[in-house]
Image (cartoon, rainbow, N blue to C red; front, side, top):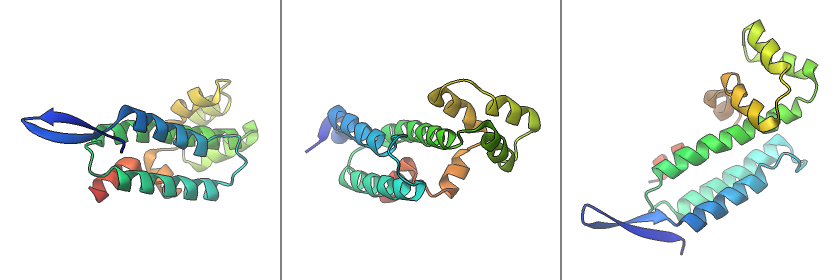
Length: 148
């Protein structure tokens, strides 16, 4: 079934079993793999389908903390995908300037020699959560709060 049980103030409550959460994270990792060759629209659609289905199945569970943590991790993966797509420094400059960053920040981030995962953390200044939502990516926490 995928649920685990715990007691809270004398009542029995549901939570997502750790194995189910691990499987979900693995599936999201598979969907957001950088070398898939999928367009951003297709990736966004597949991710939204999976997230909606998974959250609707487990909506009875108490998983606000899990959704917040997974959402943060997912947004970082999305930033890494976009960073990989902006392969050339020239493209990075152009896109970072379009995000209205100061010139010193654009220069610092665009010329970074860090890996994708590390740069995705730095990129959170430019690709904010609002921008990721405008790009059409679903927030797991927001959808869970809306459904439950």
